[in-house]
Image 1: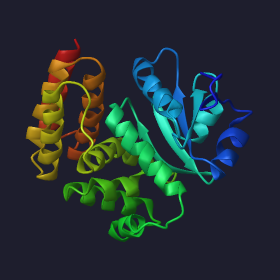
Image 2: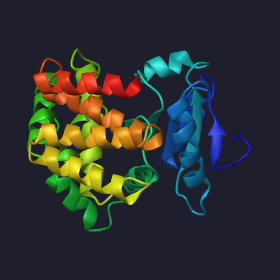
Image 3: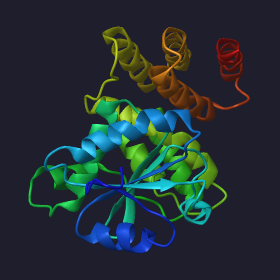
Image 4: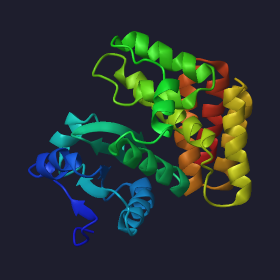
Amino acid sequence: MSQQKSVIDVNQATFQADVVQRSHSIPIIVDFWAPWCGPCRMLGPILERLASEANSGFLLAKVNSDHNQQISMQYGIRGIPAVKAFVNGKVVDEFVGAQPEPMVRQFIQRVIASHQPQTSQSQPQAKSQSSPVSSDPSSRLNQARELLRKGKGCEAESQLKGFPASPQAEAAGKLLPLAQFLCQMSRGAISGGPADLGVLYRQVADAVNKREYATAMYNLLAILNQDSGYQGGQAKVVMNSLFDFVGQNDPLTQAYQQQMIRISA
């Protein structure tokens, strides 16, 4: 991987120069991974392939989280794979867990667009549609929850990503995968793999937007039943995020958590 100009290995000593400083000239996608991580082995090749495409527009930096725990702690890495996008020295977008290639590609396209001057008409429109980000973490988290209840995944994502260090940060991190999923689906991204799984993912998004959480969980469970690998891993990430959104003590959450345990057993 490190032999490719489009993909570099980064450590604690080189992170500032190779990621933070270099992101002023080109977007840097940072992949926090570890050799023992199964989902990392699924996501890593997707990121590397996209980085190696002609005129990809970004540089992929790989960080072994086991060997670089200090930098992982600095950027709040609680689970891997974790992907953070740096532009002009700052984290501008991120996601956690293995994602299907269409969603990864959409993520990268957003990051690259954020690095370009706002000369097109589309970017000002996107900004005018976003909700103001509160400086108070509690208000910011509550606003994100309200946006999720309204089915506004992209606006909720803007509230949750880059969340400041605070007592509410952990809760925000748990809701972020659900917001990212809804946002990506609203932009036309569908799951890779069999067409029927793509249909189920769309039904999940539609159900969440309509506050039909039982239907959403049912369809996510159906994906888990059909595919215990890559697609199942993505469904599990969204399901766990939905559990936190609905509430860990909610009877619906507890019922589906038991069903997930039976599938995994």
